Length: 343
Image 1: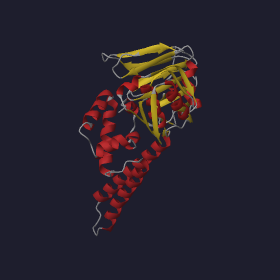
Image 2 (image 1 turned 120 degrees about the vertical axis):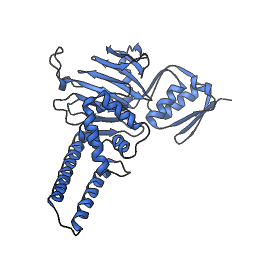
Image 3 (image 1 turned 180 degrees about the vertical axis):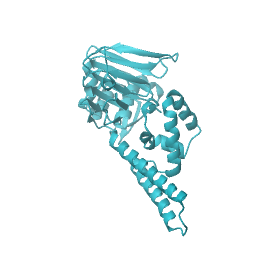
Image 4 (image 1 turned 60 degrees about the vertical axis):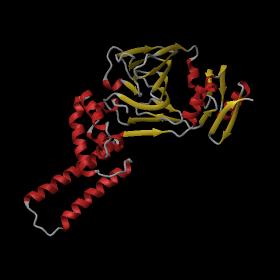
């Protein structure tokens, strides 16, 4: 789980975070340690986590975790509690009135928190094989690849411009900083991935973050990567146009130079581009971005490589290229593909 997003969470954010709600209602063996670690890493979150847990425990004891159902069930549960109090044949004391008043106040607070969260939090998911352009609150844009997810708060105001991505996206960030030696909080733009943070001022870059590893290619501008290397030390790396960096958590980064960095954006035009790619690398793209299931009759087939560049507009032509270039036979049934050695 990506923990950096909890660094500036409010009470409202926790009430609408599905992972947090589940961990309170139906905790696993590791949940307690996880929230202790987050509280230790971000001390300001300790009291907020405790308050959110108390509210969820009191009013959200259900097994449904989609946000719309959560909100409806909160109101139904509270309303049922109040109705039960009203039909009981008993004399209300001052303490009873105070308890009802306190409950109504809590109901109001939860309602406002849920409404504010709904207004601020945005999550965009793309199906397999489909692209979507997202316009961010500051005028920046992100083109999302298939099977990708982007989340952000739609009211940045004076806070840093932060987004979280899982999958692949091409970022075109609006430059709003006037003085590079004095960067205000609202002028920072930070992309959170599973294993690193990317900070920019204004630039165009591609991020692919899947399977706990992240590839970053810089087309123009300048960006800084913050990550943890193989010896668990925090590191920073400044990228220049043409740099391409690959990293996995607690692993050393690899860095190469791309003579034509614009090529890494070909996927935004529904183009499939590979250079000296193995069948393992090709099948990973087909699986992650287009939802295919690729299997091999022999493990050694995954290492077969197509020399040079492949640039095709769709999966059908990619399969045709593989079949005519390598000594393999491809059996395809819908989205299931089996690659065997050619007889």
